[in-house]
Length: 288
Image 1 (cartoon, rainbow, N blue to C red):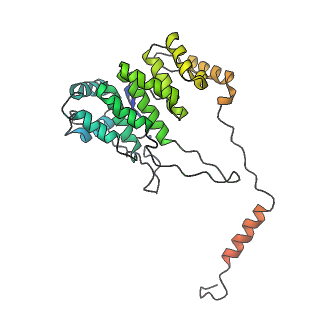
Image 2 (cartoon, one colour; image 1 turned 90 degrees about the vertical axis):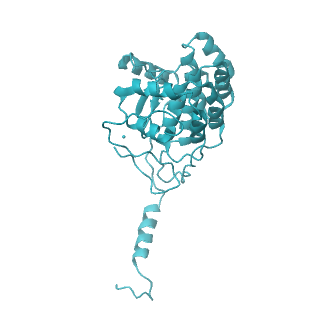
C-alpha cells in the first residue's frame, strides 16, 4: 500500500507509500494569519515510537512527520496495529473535517494515515471532505492583467485530490462507487484527474477501467492513462512518456510567461507621483 502513499511535513515530502501525488528547510511563510500554514520542519533524530490510538493521535501524527523513510515499515505496522482501535475513526475523521484547513502539511499526514488504514468506515468522511465547497482559505484575487501575476497553489483542490487517492485505496465497492461519482461530477478538474488515476491504479490500468472512465467523463478522456512514474521505472522512459503526452496535447502545456509592457505614459505617471509624494505639504512641520 505504501508504495505510493505520500505523507508530508510541508507539502508532499515524507513518503509513506502507495499513491505518490506526482505529484523543504523552513518553507516560505505568510505574514497573514488567515492563510493556510505549513507544519514547521523538525530535526529528525532518535524518536520514541508512538502508538496510534485516539489518546495519542496528535503525538502519533507528529512522530510520523519526523520519522525517516527508512522506517516506513514501522509506520505501516503502527497504523495497522491501531487502525481499528476504539474511537480512532472518529478522532481521525474529526481532524480531517476541521475546516477551514490551517495546516496543509498536517492535513496531508492525516489523509495518508487514513488511506493506509484501508478502513471502510472512512469512506463517508472522505466523501464529505472531497465534496466540501472549500476546504482551505480563499486565494488572493488576481490583479489587472497589466500588473505582475502571481502563481498560487490551490490548497483546496490539492487536498481534495489527495483525499480522492486515499478513498480509492480503501478499495471496496462503496469506495469505488464514490470514485466514479467524483470522476463524473466533481467540479474541480484536479480532483477528477486524481480520481481517474487512482481508480486506474487500483484496477491495474485495465482497458475495461479506462473505457468505463471515458464513459463517465468524456471531457477528461485525454487524462485517462497519464504517465505514472513507479520506483522501478527508468527516468528517461518516464520523461519520454510525458513529452509524448504534451506532443499530442500541446494545449495542456503551461503558458509561456509573457513580459508585461506598461501602457504609454505609465512610467512618467509613476515618476510624477513619486516626486509629488516626496514633497511634504506646505503646512507641514516636518524638516525639509
